[in-house]
Image (cartoon, rainbow, N blue to C red; front, top):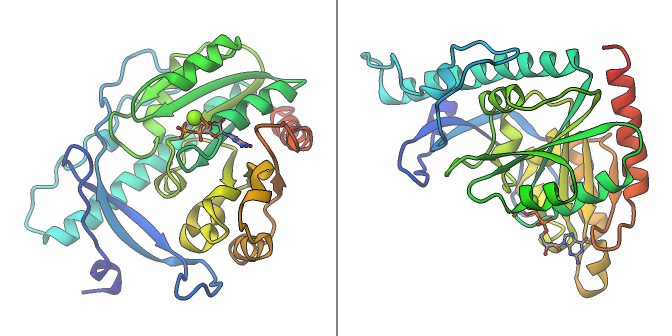
Length: 301
Ligand SMILES: Nc1nc2c(ncn2[C@@H]2O[C@H](COP(=O)(O)OP(=O)(O)OP(=O)(O)O)[C@@H](O)[C@H]2O)c(=O)[nH]1
Ligand SMILES: [Mg+2]
């Protein structure tokens, strides 16, 4: 058995219908800063309990969607572990193909897409609202991903923002087929920015591309300064990191130097902004950076 297969772990999700995907490890032995072990993967299983039905009229869609039929065609004589590995590879490969198609579709419409990731309660929605307040040049669109509820969508709609809700019903991340379906249902009529608030989770969303131009990670001082060491993939994959809730620093033991050393060991160049969703501090700079990236990217469409 290879090391890779030996690393297979089993988890059950909320509905007990497992599938596998890779789960990356950094070095979290005694707080040493390790290089990301991007070639050291193992699998974990969890559900995709969301609605697997896809409607018609996809603007840029291919109706075939094996990603939402895990297990199909898997009845054969392989060992269970080999089957899990194959399912994982199929899922990630198909997700990647659909993500590329979503990205092309959005690019053709002149839409820059930001995947907002972070732990539950990190301030993803609060940060998004601050970004929207500061956005000057581009029309905003939002897709809200939650396991249940449309609380954040209602908040954004009250602010006049075009927002579409996705409920996964249990799955811990959004994936490309869900976004492909969602954008076919949205009137993305003007050049602009699509913000996708992923499920509150510091692990799974970083593993699945959803057609985005950039991943924006909302970290917080309240989570503690060891998070890059414990949850490396999100920090490694991020194209931008907001360190939110800095208004609370006086009440915490947040070690900024330790936190930044952890980030830099994983991701040497990612821009890091200290912000407060409560006061709005730092968001002018964040939005200027986002708008310049979006304008470069969409100007050529
Ligand atoms: N003190 C302080 N509180 C904040 C800040 N940003 C967000 N909060 C609070 O943190 C809580 C969670 O904020 P949300 O924006 O809902 O967090 P979220 O990441 O969108 O949460 P989920 O969508 O549930 O995962 C709310 O009570 C916010 O008011 C901040 O900068 N400072
Ligand atoms: Mg939210």
